[in-house]
Picture 1 (spheres, rainbow over the protein chains, first blue to last red):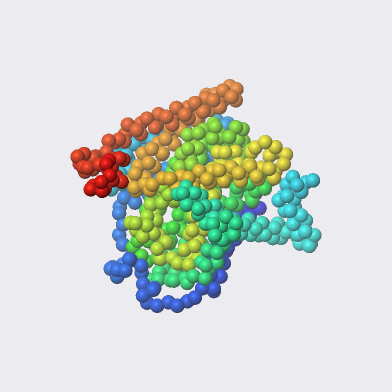
Picture 2 (picture 1 turned 135 degrees about the vertical axis):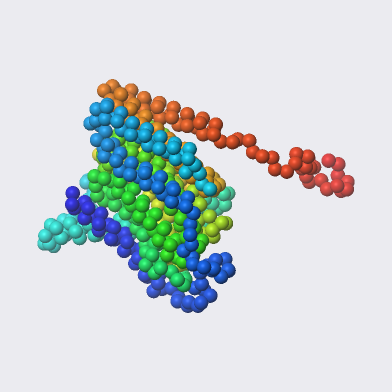
Length: 118
Length: 408
């Protein structure tokens, strides 16, 4: 069991190492001739005005919140799904009720206009 | 004989024996074996991308009535190799004001997030990196790591286009993660395990037959997760230049491309693993190498469908894309979960064929009802552009010039 996660950890390190190594090799092979025009921020030939880390629409935040609700719900539902085959009917119906409440929440958000991209 | 039945596992065992023979402790031998295995699998995946690029360019070429790459080597097979050599010698421009760590970590993360999915997928009955008990959850978590790579790229580049592109990409990816996760619940429910190995073992018949609605949602969501056409809003060239990777050049830009191609292929083999029975096929149980062949054949069929999807569909508008996700796929996925859970429980004590046909029928009914509902909600009449009375060229007068003496 622990061995499995050792493999996953090693694989994670290796999969970070390989692209990093490729980029390092490319950095060694490639020419380096920087100048101030080439290194300027690309904005179709215009000078950049103000900081690039600008304000963003609040809409992204609303979608992130709705996403959070459903992701937390998935964390709850996955163990239920694993145990599903051993569950009696009433436990299944309880989960269905839970999903129905969520569906109600989604419909509420929809009705309130949170799902409109403006 | 055992070599021909299962060459990969044979080689792995041979290498294990070799490592044991050196006389290290079993712990060290395992660790070194893991490192070598991970290196071979990950490097193999990265070199496989060269072939994938050729396959995709060739297919897109054929869809668009072109030849695709056909100059270098047989059928243009060496074209991606030449491209690779070229991109290795391109200058890596670092623009002013970038956040160094974020800027350089992003291309690495976007590849490694995809590569790590290869660690848990069963390629045949005996050949898989590792069988962890939370395989599907691991895949979803690793998908989140790829999103982090995109956000780092957009934030670290010190460029407004990059930031807007990254935010759009994140909005798209996290939204489509919801139906992705929800439809992945159905195979977990049916097989009673989150491990990908167990899910493949349990697929008698394939889950696309048992739950086609879930498979449909899963496929659409995984196409959107790869961020390719018709869901390639993040890199809408005509609006925000190229999205989050504007400021990248040389191989750093190339790494995003490697990540994208590999992600498309990985998405198709995850679909195969979860819904198309993975390595299952005739005689795959006895001869595991056949399972490997089935796995790759199925994967390439799904990958073909994915490229066809990309080559024939125009890009969505961002509001259409969000509507498709939140107003169609997510409620549909929730309904499918409830329906499958209830029907499977009700038919739990009856015969297998009865249970499976009940599930199939319920799934089909849900898909058709959803299609009807969506059609009712969508405006089908489009406003007329221009006037009806404009002169129209008819086929019998287009080639005839007035005053040329030829009668029409």
